[in-house]
Image (cartoon, rainbow, N blue to C red; front, side, top):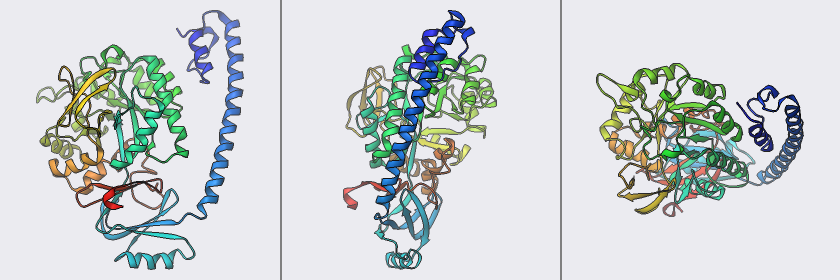
Length: 473
């Protein structure tokens, strides 16, 4: 039964409780009326705060429009475009503010300048000659716990914002900060920190927080991997609703173990909240996982890792994910979590449209080998492999640009397919493909410039140059 204290706490945070009936409150009608009055007062305050924020945004946008009148259009001219499908060039990408305005075919940079004069008369234009480089959509990491010393699960709001500033170095223009299993209070606090960091992003340059992912705590202890076992708990629909309200619509993906959701109430709640249910860290049988997909689960967590294994007589969760077209999959292409032959198997079975590249990176990613911390425990990084003291794999130090290169080198896929798995596929999975994941007119100007080996030379986030390597300066 929901208590008055629980409802009071939700109201104090400005959150509409999932259940607000006096009959459910010990203490009866009178206490319920008092709580309703308190709730109305908080709603009025929230409305005033909302109006203030909207007015502030209008002022910022007004100033931005004034500044935009003096900002040039940027035209990037490169040898090849991966949109993500390969388009032989030279190709010119016209950036207008935060969006892509046009794509042109041009013989060289001189013709691009001529096209600017013909098609953009009177416009202030800056043409960037990128030579033999390749332009791709910005990379999207839908599963990452940290980078360059910054931790998502237990870090401060500053940590989260600082990570967003670092990610353009590796071509990531959008990401889903991923919280591992922690206590209820800690999970709520971390969601609030990410929401606060996301709200401040309009004033800061860096990788966009596109949503929040919860990789716990609603998972199986049998398949916990490096998750913190004391924090793991059974799927709880009421707690999930509270976390969703705290997330202000930003909680977009939740991993859970279907076999722990005996009455399907947790899955039903996720579907009702329009949150993507992901099958992961699960000991579910083939039939249990199939039941979850029948009920609306549409994505999964790092294929083969943290799930029942594939066997020719008992195909398990992995066997189902390789064969059911209703659910998408993700893979950690670091050459450690999956053998190169298994990377090939995943793409052969499902194709690049259904396979997303992820990092599952921890805070040690981007740093030298050594000892670091992950959810209050020490992890050791040796030769690019992250493990707990007992030898359990604990995430990775993979970066998404390296994952793309690894898929070409280890799995033999084309550049176009590898890039798709880091751009359009994750955008489609998470429901943001209407603005991200493609290089096309009207899309966000989230772009990566690669050299011929796939190394990041420039990263553009919403039309702003967020990173440029020394080699390309």
